[in-house]
Structures are given as C-alpha cells and as structure tokens.
Length: 168
Image 1 (cartoon, one colour):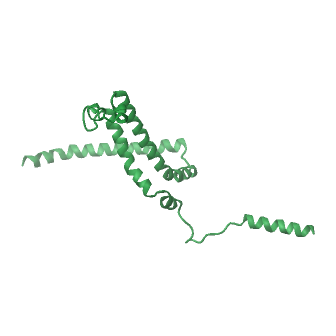
Image 2 (cartoon, one colour):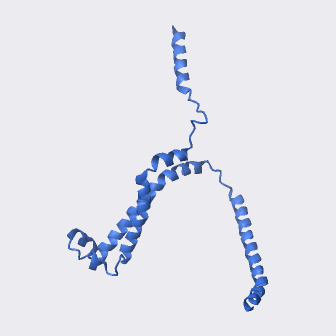
C-alpha cells in the first residue's frame, strides 16, 4: 500500500516538473510579442499626439501660442472656465507645465514596453573592469587625436590647392 502511494507522488512530481518543449515554429521573439500585443492604434495615436502636447505646453509657458499676448485671445474668450486658466501669467505657466508633464508621462508610458525587455537583457551583460574600460577609452581618445591631426594636415596641404582653384 505504501509503495502505491509513493509511486503516485512520484508520478505527480514528474507531471509538474515537465515543461512542454516548443518546436522552432512555436517559439516567438519576446520583442515581436510586445510589438504585436501592446502597440495598438491608440498607442500610436498617443505617440504622435504627446510631442504635440509637449510643444503646446512649451508655447503656452513662454507666451508665444499664436500671439504675443495670450490673455487677449484665451483670457477674454467669454468662457469662464477657459478665462480662469489664461488670465494671469501664473495660471498660464501652470497650464503649460501641466501639459508638458502629461505629454512626458505619456511618452514614458509608451516607452515602458520597449524598455522592459532591454532592462532584462542589461542584467545579463558582463560589464568591463575599470582597467579594461580605461584602456579602451584611451585607445578611442588616441584615435580621435590621430584623426584630428590627420585632417588638420590635410587642411594645410589642400588649402593652397583650393585657393588656386578658386582664383581661376
């Protein structure tokens, strides 16, 4: 009787531990899944409209939204709700800042599905040591100095030729 119970427990463990193996056709890229599932037409619309919202916020804040004097247009519209937000400079500045913050938050919201897998991959990266980083940085800097000297010499060598060609 005890043997039957042990076999039943072992069989249950085997069923739990086994994972289904996917064929290459069934495997999907995580990035493609995110792009297909999370970017609907609404997200693309938000991606287009959020920079526009940020620009409107900047224009309202600096006071160049269609006119030099916003209170003449928006502050005296006759609609009390709109007039409240644009009659004073402080209210206009607050409205502009709120629009910029909302636009920035929408952009962050849209970037999160893209950045999430990148962050997971970033954890897997083996970063260079300080010595290796210093060596690589000095090589790149030396290469830039070499290019700077090379193009300066080209300039000194070719300037007389170009002056002569312009004089013709």
